[in-house]
Length: 72
Image 1 (cartoon, rainbow, N blue to C red):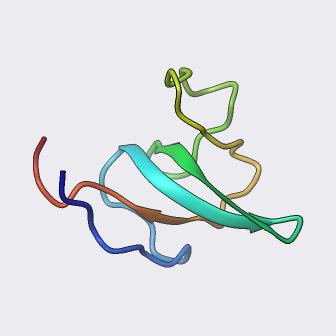
Image 2: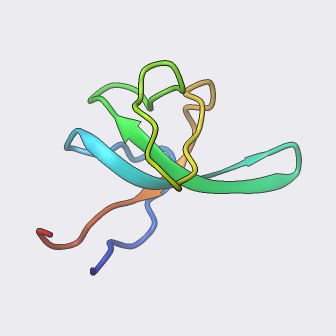
Image 3: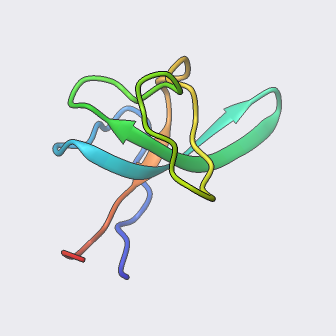
């Protein structure tokens, strides 16, 4: 599956959906998956658990992200 390049946190996705995300917190880089609802990143209460995958709280809205570069 082909992925897009990483986008800076200031650039927001145009489409709703799941994205691979990355952010710095507590001097550690966290990488996993977050849901973009069109205006903000998901938090653990809003998003269904993706079995076996990491996903982040919506508290941090400054996340780098990338998505699919082609239809699955």
